[in-house]
Length: 257
Image (cartoon, rainbow, N blue to C red; front, side, top):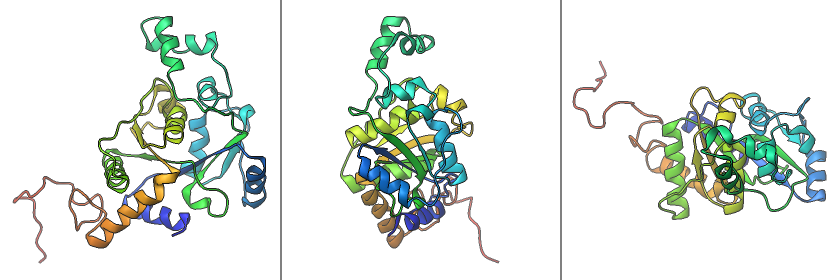
């Protein structure tokens, strides 16, 4: 299947509210130039924004966004992407979360961080990247049960159990994607204080991030389940999310007239 076809299946079968976001870290000039030449339309931040705000355009408006360090106004994301060294401002920016500045420093330096500075970063709806690039990560903004279905399919497809997500202070979208890319592992984490406000996750969305190298296998697991019964794990045979009632309850049954 193409990525566009995969997106259509995911939107329908998981009842996603947002497009899955395909994240790409560009380290190669030739690969970046090919992306620029082939992308039908690229959007860039008018002013420096947060990384989670870049993703708003991709997941809500269906836009392909590309930006470099000058388009990123979040020091925390700059640090995770290797675009900024550790400084006093970054440490003090975490003071409200921790017991003291010594703890703040230890927590900041323990965050996932790209080993090589990217030339730039693209975020786009999964369905828009065919012929443009292979995603380094696929980032879902979804609800609890959608996240569970993605996690279960990933575990089955990759023979991984249990999952051990990586949750950090104030770095859910940026650090969360870096972790999945660097470790090549599934990540599932709540919105941080920054992405909750700036990234528009007031609906209580959960972040699910799957490394691109393992995304196709995860998707195929979903397709295998659909072929056998349905996309619903909670009630196989029903369309996801299925009947949201107590399992096997003898009282909540509807009969055709």
